Image (cartoon, rainbow over all chains, first blue to last red; front, side, top):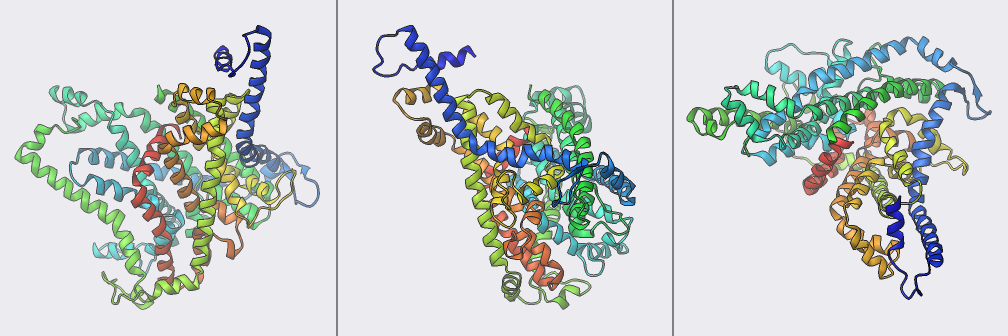
Length: 317
Length: 289
């Protein structure tokens, strides 16, 4: 903190009389107080916003899940009652299984794709700007628009997807209407509208892979795929790991796809934890149950976020 | 710069054939995967309900009757929804800049007591995924602590939470940290107040980061769905995404599709114009999101 003190003392007030040590100390104190007052004046807007909409809700979330609250009488502590209610709900198991399956499928379908696209794009010398623009277009659509667009594509009758399948002589699928394909359909929309982000981030990361590594690998006789495996992937390992964790955290919160496409159906095949939380609060009026679900999701995601933080710290170095 | 494939390999006749083949596949594939759905949307809106139900579908619409866009505009109150969304996104933008820039400046240059703690608490919010705090945040907006104000159906329900963005504070502070101290001290000696230093020295040199934060904040609010769904339940107050989604069930297919086109135009236009800043924001956030 000596640095700060020095900094404060250095600008001499213009016209100040001789440097008497006593005056100087009092002046420094006054300046420090003034600086703090100004600083907190500048900070107060942000402090209010964060306090109201970030910090207080974190505390409130815990209260919510251990209290019974009808918002008329004072809330009552009920221990783990809310958790018990939620866990005994038959949809609870489906919600977690579906959320995990959604995340897993999104990884299988969508995790490698942006990386592969980025590696290919990085080799192309033409149409670069066009390809980069186009891959990011779906990301720019409002998610609700993308999801509703796909709802129409999934239409079992004249929907685009069944028409395309028909063109290849493949029998039509019932997409959102069947328990076996509904969740995959949600993953497809989600992948389509988020693909561009990963691709562009990997593309940026690939710029920093030193070219002579490829050069020497090639001199050692490494073929194309061995060069990807032994040079590209190790060189981008950390960003790959960061993106993996970010994607899992993001997909575990999936809400808008089931909300707009299936309403959790058919037969709870697409109920997710976030969607069930929403239903508890806004359809059943049970904010305690919703809060309990939210808290469970928070714990799971915090563990993942903690891993992410460790990894990204390492990545910064 | 040397990449995966050596320039030598590309110069051989064989390499050239492979390169052009891959380029063609990629361009066609990308166009099919990312542009064709949008083409299908824009032309789908021009088709009559009968033509939309027709199997096999027509590649070009029978007629170029733009009337359906007018229908969508009128029947869905798209004008109201768009105006609302502009109000929410614009206000959130101004509010975010005012709040987060001053906060980042205070934390970076004025360094008050507990500044590090405050910054830490702001960054800690990035660890908590927004979805899990949805219910308590909603309850807060519904009944603001101490003041007991109900923010539902008011723009404040969008503006205030939008400004509580730890990532923006982080980006801004990191940029302000890189402004040399000598620059500010000179002004300080000349008797400039902190506000004046912020306005006349810090802001002008921070244009790039202000651009990134501006676009990110506008686009985020514009695209958001869950939060406006909860806090703006009145039809007259809805944002465009929520409005279309909530009225989608009652609309004829072609009118719905036309409204999707109208809803996606603004963000795509923004992307056309501010592509550079948007991509810069993307990579700025990639490692430290």
